[in-house]
Length: 273
Image 1 (cartoon, rainbow, N blue to C red):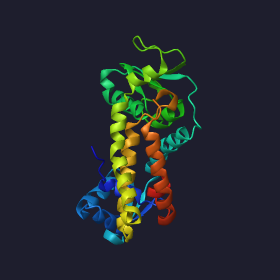
Image 2: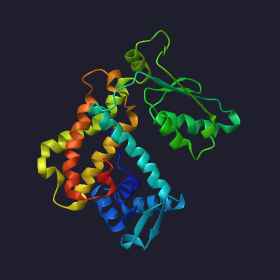
Image 3: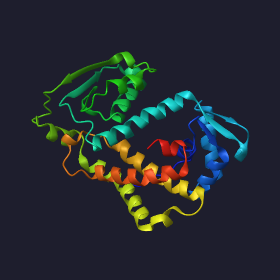
């Protein structure tokens, strides 16, 4: 399934280092993507309603200012990008430890329980049983950052072990293959692979001659990359088969992106990757 560029993603991608987006530019890029102005207006309205942003001025002459909390969430997401690159470069080898995180939340606090589950899975955890999750990464700092402002912060029990058995499996690679199957991860990278192939086939002409068109293609690449990364638990290379196709695809993406970022400027879209 291909990843879709949403109106909100367009807005957030064009925020600059100060957290400000020029709405004229936002609307121009949205049009280049085939997104109408009405969906963009609705996305902006929702961001304002939820407190994620404030608008100054009206219509295309206005600017949107992302609030500090939303910018902090974005910095958390950037951590995953940089971690993937470090692993690919062999700079983050596995220490052989499994991190366990457990919680028990009563039914009356279902929303808290659901939030904790979603957070641990988003951070690359896999369920070993009800309320028990495991990761191959040292994820304590990320868990603390993600749960700091929630009522689930004090409900977590954590442990570390180098001796994990899942059913009859004790071999780390076999455990990883069962808990984090490769097939859905590889499928998530296919849209990115297809776009990179198209860019390679088109050469310089693939980017077009106008700025909105170039940004539109960059957004499609960024969304495809994000879609893949959200699905990928980013297991250490020691726990995946070799060669591992996502490693090569991320290298191709970085090579393309380095060229684009040098030419286009400092919008969040380019500095994020």
